[in-house]
Length: 338
Figure 1 (cartoon, helix red, strand yellow):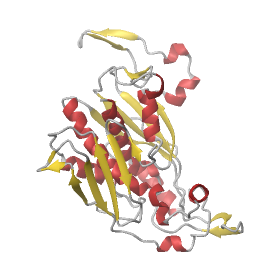
Figure 2 (cartoon, helix red, strand yellow):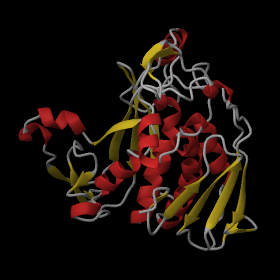
Figure 3 (cartoon, helix red, strand yellow):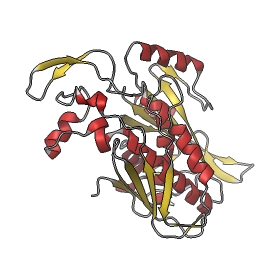
């Protein structure tokens, strides 16, 4: 298994790391003759970029070059390769703590696995790599629009920050969340959150039994996003507290559409690992960012106790900028099935 690749029919492979000069993503499975929507790529990249005072101060313009698989703005059917340059590289904040096992970071596990220290900024384990997922996700959306006659739609938003919830789609994060996140940053801390994605107008019958159930593959893809700790579809964890009589989705005949449909959608658009034709509703939960300014306690690589603070440039809540990443990985999974 290639640890840096995902998918088979629509496959992405990423390379490069947080503080490398260049990063790249290779995309195979794009049909020939699809007009490349550069505005869509730019829009999705802008959604991932920091924009609030509580986001990372690291600013990257995410300027990219398509070096293969494109001819005069149209896909050739060959592998698409996109290269992006990292311009805001700063290794200095990591120098003083390079000999410390930081709490909830991958310093220890990476060193045990590879025998090498983790490179500055987390290397390939840094969330910086998600910029490549967003680019690939934009191409997945282009393919889906082509295959599904522009019908499929994605609605993705910050579902929660700490104990503040936004159960319905909102174009912008609420002012209450912003005020709370500003306070968390002032305190030198971080906070967990979640992202919800609703996929509309997806055909029924997508997904395979046993190991390739669509929600199983979505879980695999979405749990690969840095800081992701839990995934659910439909009522998810809440369903484990419900009775069957409460959770079951009865069917009805829709006189307008002239077809049989579920009367409600607690299943989140998936039954038996196969889409029902109703909205797919999924939620991804993210842990608090591990790098915080508050003093922490750990040990150095000789096992000696240390007290330290993680400097550098970090977000306060992963869920804010993960909205674009969750949507991208969801699109990539559906493109694989389609």
